[in-house]
Picture 1 (cartoon, helix red, strand yellow):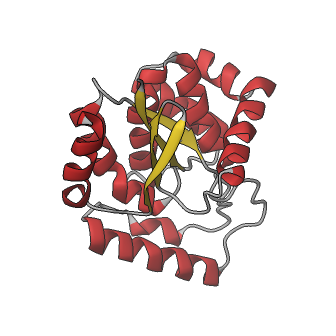
Picture 2: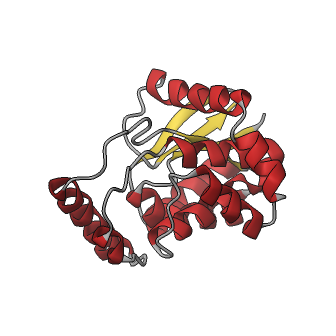
Length: 206
């Protein structure tokens, strides 16, 4: 029998950034028996209008909640900029691109993107910036950009979005435990490692 965890997230989702140390701990603890596979859910794909004042207030409030609950760092200078378009599709596509190039790097690259956006205040909605970040991570920048902007990656990313929607996944992070193609919901939303360690260890060992 084969087991794995399916992690559905978005690189520009603040609660996913909050959950990042937890999913890393899950991968570290159980990868031999149940590796973590990453899919992207599409938090705000296709957004075209810049953030307004009330949008910033709403998102800032969320960031404070995540920081208080998880202790993860945020650069709130993000909200000083004008004309930011909060389109998460390109960053999601970057995770899919990383997964295509090397599936084992998809999860650490997702964490790298989280940090680039939330801590380093980099515009991960722009393809050129995503290619720069991928190059710093260890991918070949030009190869990554070529694949990132290809129709195949756009189609595969939409396939991830479709999977999430058709599976009834409406929020991120969502973690599923999969055994022989049968999925069990572990969490829809943030949970600390302390709440997950024992039940996940039991499932992996069963």
